[in-house]
Length: 362
Image 1 (cartoon, rainbow, N blue to C red):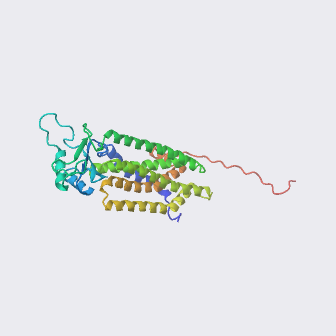
Image 2 (cartoon, one colour; image 1 turned 45 degrees about the horizontal axis):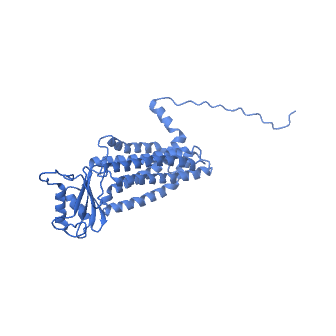
Image 3 (cartoon, one colour; image 1 turned 30 degrees about the vertical axis):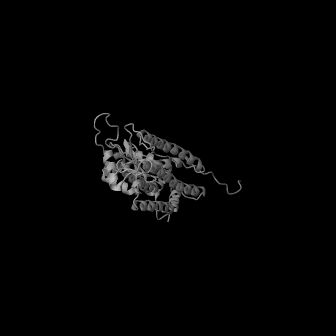
C-alpha cells in the first residue's frame, strides 16, 4: 500500500490547494467590514419579559423576527421568564423630561408580544392586562433594571475576544514547546511544534476567512458562540496532528531502512483511516444538529463544521508535509526556482582505498 499511494510526493500541490482556498478569505478579511459583528460586539438592547402562561422560546423568536429583529437571541431563565437581546431598539434610552414621550419600538414590541401570547405578568408573576411587566435596558443609556437585566456592553465582549486571542497565542507557544520536548527522541524535534502551530494558524485563518465571506454574502454574524467554536477547532486541529506525529515518531524509532519521507508517508497511511473516522463522526453530529434546527447556535455549528474539515485536512496534508519539506529543503529550492538562481554545485571526493595485504610480505 505504501508503494501504491505516495502522499508526500505531491505535497507541493497540497500547499497550492491550501493557498487557493485561503486566498479568498484573506482578501475578504482585508475589505471593511472585515467581519459582521453580532450584538455581542456592538451596541444593543437587552430586556426581560415574563409571560402569564408558558410560551415556547421558538415562538418568541418567530415573533421578534416578524417585528424586524431576526437577530434577537432568546434565553430562558425559568418561570416563564426570558431575556431577549437585540440590536439597539429605537426609544430604548431615556425620553425627554418634559412633553409627550415619543412612540418607541419598545412599546410596539410590548404590544405585539401581549397580542400574540396574552397578558404579560408583573414581577410577582401576577397578570396585568393594562400594564405588562416588560422592562428594557439599553447599553447607550442609563436605565434601571429590577430583575438584574443583562446588558450587552461592547467592552465586555471585546474583553472576552481579547482574552480569547491571548489564550490562542499562549496555547500556540505552549504547544510548540510541548511538542518540542515530547518528540525530543526524533532529530530536530522543534519542527514538530512548528508544523503543528502552522496547521493551527491555517485552520483559524480558514474559518475566519469563511465567516468574513459569509458575513458579506448572507449576513452571517460573529458572536460569542463563534469564539467558542474557534477555540474548539484549535484543540481539534492540534489533537489530530499529534496523532500523526506520534506514529511518525514510532516509525522513526524503529530504525527501519527508509528515508524520512518514506517514514512520514507510511505513518500517514497508517493513521489516515483513524483521522477520517474521527472527523466523520463529528461532522455527522454537527449536521444532525443543523438539520434538527440549531438556529440559536448556527454560527457555532458552521464554524465547527468548517474547522473540523480544515483540521482533518491540515493534519494530513499540511502539518505532516511540512516535516518532509523541512527535511528535504523544499523552501530554499523553491526560492531558488522563483528567483532564477542556479542550484548549488556539490563536489564529491572519493577516498582512495588502502591496499589490502593478502599474504605474508617477502
